[in-house]
Amino acid sequence: MIRRVKHIDQLGRLVQVGAAGGSGVRMVRITGVSANNVYNARPLEFDATGQPQIVGTNTMTVTNLAEPANATGSVQANTDAVALDVGKRWVVFLRQAGSAMFPAVIVSSQGGAVYTVREQSVSALGTFSDAAGSVNITAQNLAELSLGSGGAVTVGTIVLVTSITDTGSPATVRYIFSHPAYAKYLS
Image 1 (cartoon, rainbow, N blue to C red):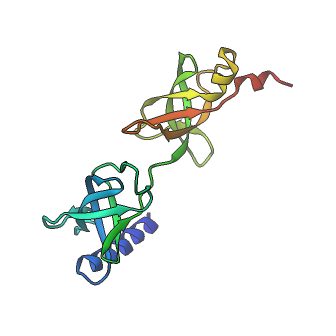
Image 2: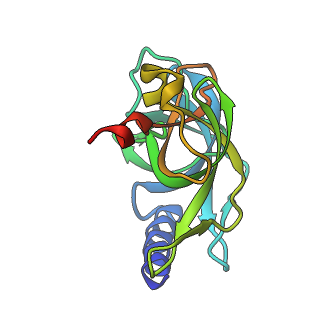
């Protein structure tokens, strides 16, 4: 917790200096795509409680260097970023969320390699329980897609679930895991 507060404090100081015009750094909130990898944004600063707030009524143009210049921008509105002034042009570097992995318990089978799972947290003793605020989500078993229904996973099994974004527009987060149940019969 202390490390996070220190990080926010340091970032806050850097951004506040940028807001005062002393450096080429601004915190911004993306408001929408202008064209390709160029976005409209509003300047931000931290308030007294450390929360970002929009400053003034000005709109800025920022270029996302993490996206190809000829591709349609895919950064969602209301995304906050730190922008740098490079040769009188504001740039950000925002990648799409790649993936995250978390432990989950199999709650039920929906059939066809599709399961209902719930995120788990791990105690200091190594035991699993439902993560605070967790909800049931749908995930696919990649091993079962390859092995067939004989590879079904038993309710109560803990698996590692990976979240990925699909290629849709807008992209949708999908959840997958690979748990080859056939392996338990091999000896």
